Image (cartoon, rainbow, N blue to C red; front, side, top):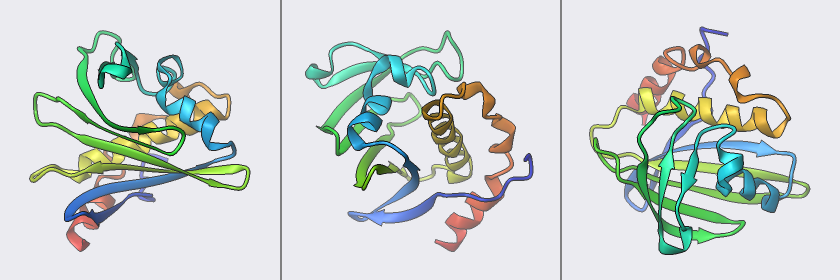
Length: 170
């Protein structure tokens, strides 16, 4: 699995800006998947947790999947329309990331459309594999598996060439 090149991401123009867009389908209703994506205790199982009061429009996000002692990122909530759409900006020291997702019900299943607006100079060859990894960790958790069963080396650097060629072609 370490020479993986099957990527699910695309780079799409949205309102004049390039966005990395990835999808996953989950065998659950949108309201249930929304909780996996927004409730701190559920998020922590696959990516991290948040602290604070979302009603203020700002939270502190701790990406604990990478390290338990990671410093928090301030996250500004720009749109929250449960269980349909969420968008927000991080305040990363190396540059803000605009992240968003939409949930589309397809009968008893839900399509997750996840995106990140790409800032000038960002390397999608590194960003794409990271989101593939985290979204597959979410898939694992929703199937009752521990997220640690998803091996990082199956994504990075394995998917880097495919993401680089995606950008070169786009």
